[in-house]
Length: 130
Image (cartoon, rainbow, N blue to C red; front, side):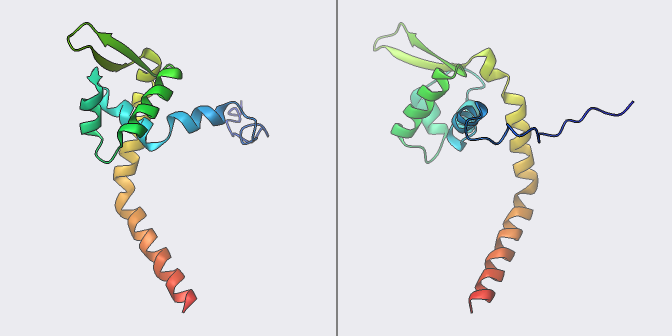
């Protein structure tokens, strides 16, 4: 028996109206992925911000809202004085930890090769322009 065809060439995956596009846009950007990575346990906003060097307060706020809207994280108001808020992964968000982890591992494993190819490309481009 032949193996089933698991290719993604069914004509709908890359269409502009494919329902996966906005979801991928919202969860696969760098800040969403890194925010979810630091939520291995519940954290407050400032703790998340400290762990994500370079993220602005505005971008982190937008990222957290988007992830909450998509059901990836949960926002919980803490009964403290002053009132605090913490964020944690939902079961749906937790289900992304493994694939995101694999993507991160792949990135680390191939960083040197990618940097070398970028340098090769840039050098080739400079040679062609001169």
